[in-house]
Length: 303
Image 1 (cartoon, rainbow, N blue to C red):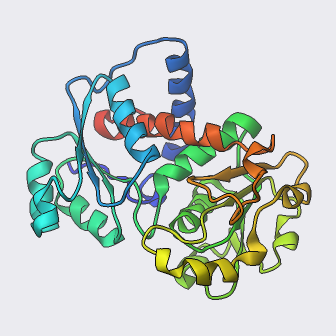
Image 2 (cartoon, rainbow, N blue to C red):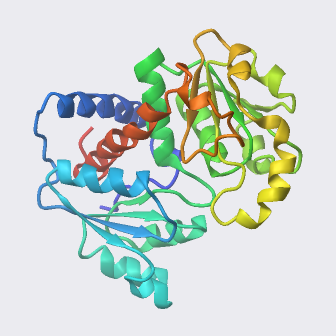
């Protein structure tokens, strides 16, 4: 039987995603109650990192440890991938030795190619096009604080990047309204805007976009690999900073999220993360719990 992969949110059904959110909340409660749960004892996760990481590495390694399993960190310096071995060859070999593979890379096509030749589940832990693991944590965080996200209004502020793309997928999969507000020339891919047109609208006016929003989310103006565009992007995005005042214009129960790391004084005001409406620290922690639910689901087939 071919393995299940998690390359984008569309790889799982709405029901399966809903299960993962509730399971993540259960696993979080179990951990805090000191309840040992080791469904992956004797299992190993291979972790391929072509992009640097704090939250992704720590959350996946810790999750495997708490589940009784092990993890192996592989950077380009540690593998033949960094010396030009074809991705499909590495996939064939690694997937005969480990029980799942997590990849954090640049081109999304690399994740897809690896999954095509892998005998075990492959998880996209971030590519230039999508960041589905972060969306699991975000929806879990909203659910914990405000209940079901279905039917709510979510505002994405800033770049039409991989996070924005995954939010568009999430709008369909979790059935919420998404408004994307950013400057011209930085919109998300038109193909995705068209595909999710029933759930997603673009609005240049950030203040109008914020009206009635239950959740406001943003990300850095220049992602990894775009550092040389920093000055140009800072100018283009100057009117799209998320501030306390912007939150004041949203729904009275609005939450703010950011996948971190955040650049205070750029995409957010210096004081925003300390605002009581900000739940970024819960959001960051929930990467651990959401990914544990995902690993358990993919490796054991439990749901």
